[in-house]
Length: 446
Ligand SMILES: Cc1ncc(COP(=O)(O)O)c(C=O)c1O
Image (cartoon, rainbow, N blue to C red):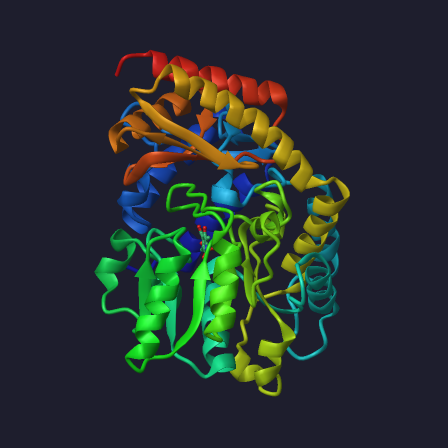
């Protein structure tokens, strides 16, 4: 039922009071948690609460502030963030250089007119061309990874005139209809069937399977516009393919004249110890997509980056190429420009490689002592995964770590592999603390 204007003004003023207050009283802190527990079931969905380890019958934890590798709950309790927003927080929470750029930009202009020329879109796209491999040059800026992949799939069809796509089992490319069609996980796809036709899924890491699928499709009169893959599967369980995989896919795509689309939404910007996942094997995709850490952990921005030879086929028609009301606006572009500056000037990929190697050694050491619980610890740079013997064990470990104030990426429906994706700013003592917390968690018989 619609509320009166007075009620809306009073309720919004109360909330603005919380947002704008430098310090909350204990009563206000408790009230915010209580409000959240009421609001989610009534106005969002109870399933979100129930899927989170921060929700329980005794104590529930609401987040309120963050900094570098640490999240704080509303009562000021600190958590080390090894979940890293599933890849968003490579630069940590509120990196000062990124925050400063966004603040200054906000003081001048937030969003763009949609008619005058917006300079930051051009500057950011130029910087993206400067850091991406080979001839990747034209950027299409959007707000989320799934939108970037949507446009990648559309451009592949436009540029090649072909139709079908090869994607991979367990691959994750987003949840809008096109990207979901490329996603290779039944749990996400099944409720929405039928999806966009023309997607065939093959096992990940197996280039011969991709070639065989294309060969069969072509033989039966179909056409293939592109192959879409992640350099390392993130959501699929930190699956690292053989070093020959992407180079072989490059050759196969060239042979069958279809586009290699590499989804770097999670692996890009330095996460894996190189600026991009493809840099480990020196492959240039036809189209690359970026997201998550691209906005420096401060702003939602994603990009599809394409080689001019494909982009130029539709260059004269910006409406077919796509338009997005908020995509690449000055506020988010300023964050991405600052993020690129930090990533290159501070050698974030190098730091990710070093800290990742140290962290992984620690995880593997622990794995060797609990082989009955943990099957493997694997990873590249600061994208790591621990594979447990089953979901239940993984979930209990994630819960045990949460109780020890460490966040990791293990959820109720997908905890057999727990992801560890900390910010580059995680300190060595923080890594040691996490390893010790993991050791203690595994030592407790469940
Ligand atoms: C590899 C990959 N692609 C695409 C996406 C979708 O990004 P978004 O959630 O921003 O739409 C994700 C998100 O986890 C991802 O990991």
